[in-house]
Image (cartoon, rainbow, N blue to C red; front, side, top):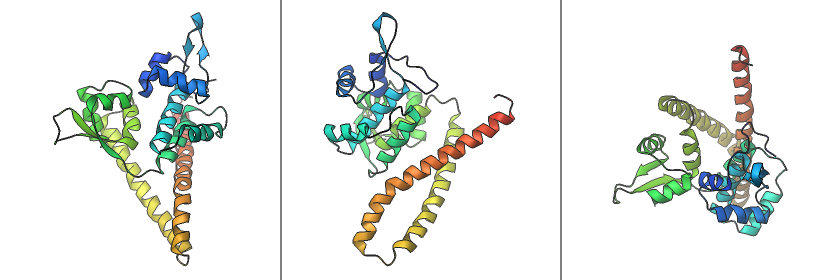
Amino acid sequence: MTTDAEEPTLTVDELAARAGVTVRTVRFYGGKGLLPPPVIGARRVGHYGPEHVARLALIEELQRQGMTLAAIERYLHQLPAGLTAHELAIHRAVVASWAPDAVETVPRRELERRAGRPLSAGDLERLAAMNVVTADEGGDGGAFRVDAGLLRLGVQLLDVPLSQEVILAAREVLMEHSRAAARELSRLFRGEVAERAAQDVRSLSAHMHPLVVQALLTTFQRSLREELGEWLGGSGTD
């Protein structure tokens, strides 16, 4: 069932740990049809892949939006079949764009549960450099303020074989160009709705926000694929 490059090699315990949930939760979602069945390997052991991890992250994001289990079921059942982990991550990013910025203060144990892994002192330093977490100065030293919308991305970046300097420089590039795009889009939309009633403007804004985010993500995804394809093709590594 896996279409990403990474094969389904996670056991149910490893999947639960990676997603920051319990094995019971994984089995519950599987029984509800919210997770595809695992690939059955030797000794009848089920193996899970990156799509399962991404789908659990999407479910978690939908829960953060306050959606009921029934609403989450309807949302997931409306998705096209066979979505890759990357495509599910785009859906999660769009869902996350509906929510206001959410910064919470949590103890380290809860932070690691949400991250789905233990976090070393070096990991915490890198997450802090990316503005994902900061130590809670008013606490006892064991609590952290965490940007819930950035945590999963930050944790994934911990395993990317790039230096901290390159990651931070990439962040600055993305922020600079996303701000420029936001300014231009805002200017276009303001001109379009200038003569409309306030209620119409609010309604349009509510509908356009997730649509614009999805459009930006899709456009960037395709542009990055083209750039990487040209780079790898030119380097003779194809």
